[in-house]
Image (cartoon, rainbow, N blue to C red):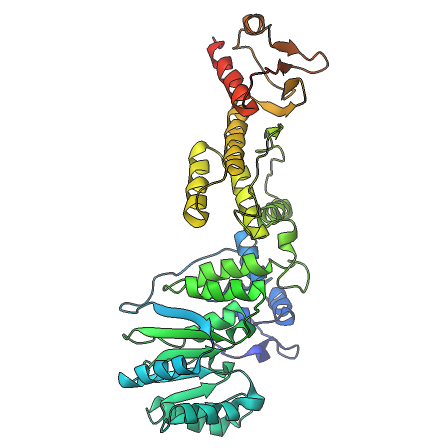
Length: 445
């Protein structure tokens, strides 16, 4: 007879003085709430056991590990039947609006969570809310209260004896009260994305429509704070935790896989490149076959054209870099068209300089098909350098060169390198090169 023992505990189970005789499975819930030291302990445990880590909003480093192949990733995005999305709004602190919000919830016999994360002044806040809405039944809880007092307040609240629960982030997880469908969060700019998402998840637990209101007080929010709050407003549909975590990864960076840093630095080199580095190194560690020459052949274009995304079109540098990277990674014209449509949809009419950038990207795709390594330009010529291993056995080279002798010359020190004489009436070097490349097709057997 086999006896199965299940132990449920807090971080205490990870302390040095606790040892397991025959541990077979470790399940970590709310993974994002664990610090670096706890995760190092988990690493040492999981050498010999299976481990399942659960999180609605994984921290950047954890998500990066999964996306890079260091961990297996499974997504559950199907919400419970009948559950409705939580409508989220963002605005400057306004007491009149807060009064209307609370009155509206109470009018439908509901209750309100009011998140105020300052223990020192939370009782003062309670008094101001009672003055704002006379006759309101309000309870206060925070982490420095005695557990018995917290329990008494929560019992009254869950039994509908209170209208509002004024609380710190102590209510972040573990509460399931279907009658609470409005949440007000004061100064949300001081919270992380995971915290905001977890807090918002405390409402909308029943079949009624739920509303979350974020009221910031500082008019001069940092760029990072604005991105966090806008992300909360944007990703309000059910099952959006993964996309919100991706946004958090984009905002804060991935952190260090082999260091205590749980976020940061990755945007200095770009997440795509960072992920490629991790993927390559991960395959080496696992002993997988990794072809270092795979997909390495690309065409470098250095033409005298003003092809760029101007900062007057997209102000945010990180977003501009993202679109540059997407253009660089496009594998066909259909992918370029998707990027173009998104730019138009998000930022309006595409400027001339950016149109040239798309033309250059199309030229790159066309040149790659013919194994062209570099296209460059000076005052008199446009140069085309083919890769050294290029094979032209299916092209009538002699006829090709003869027909183009008036503009075409060989470059003697390279294997299949040409220079095209520029025309005085030439309007676009991009179109000129594209036309030249297209002509090669006609000389194939």
